[in-house]
Length: 245
Length: 149
Image (cartoon, rainbow over all chains, first blue to last red; front, side, top):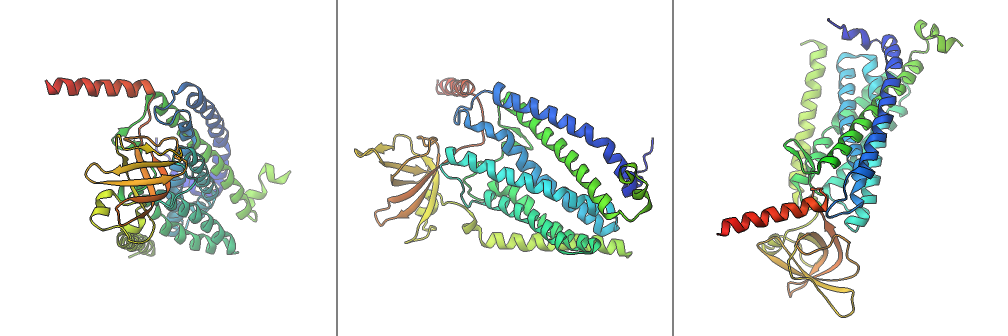
């Protein structure tokens, strides 16, 4: 069965589709969060070095992965918007930015809370921590630039360039622990496998999936509001039952 | 070329150019980006003189000695080829242990001893329960015993 994907690049059809999808993603995210955090906090064993302290990893690592991956997705949508001049791609990029910024902030915050008892410092200027901080600033800069230009189409183009240029930072974050001496330890999840006990791994992958589903649900909800806001003068919006009432 | 293809080229060339520029900058700043020097680098005179810097490595086995005041600690940082003795007065992080990772900040005097004003613990990326760690160590010891026979 061939699906006409271009059909969903029209804001009017995507608006309806997103509305149908949100509850599924939201409910499964809530369920996976509950299961993942339960396994992480009550089932997974203590660590031989760090005791109970390591358990913040079940929030820290998924948040960090999502902050980096969402940036790439945002830059990809921004690039699509520039290349094909589609309205929806640019709206998706703007919808992703706040969630990405939130995950970058959670990553830095939980990292500081973890660093103090284990390393002995809330913060060090090593390559991993600094490049993640730059990622947060890129998200904030993207949002600030977008909202500082009144014409939304021009705002899309200007902020798309910032998003694309900033994507250079993501591989730097990922490889920083390999390229330079850092206080931050190396990657636990590598392409070749993980160096982690099985129950710990399960908890981490489940909370990672939960963060994914949460991000999708929130971005879809946000893009629906953006669509309504930007297309408010069109006939199809005026005919929506939730707008008329 | 169609305008759309031009835009694709513009973006690809732009990313490549920015990536190259950032790569060259980071390459030039290599030493400043790294958080610490290894003991070997200090012996090769690559570390700065007369100002504070960080040394990272492992706490040498059997080197930790506490002085009578209970706060001053002497230990050595090693990268298994060179070692730097360190004097530190203060509270050590919980993970500070012989044979484990450590990063100390301070100045190295003419006597070759680092007077540290901050000692941080560096842990590795392996997570496992204590029983699994014991099992691994036993297996390693058994292997070593077999090989030495």
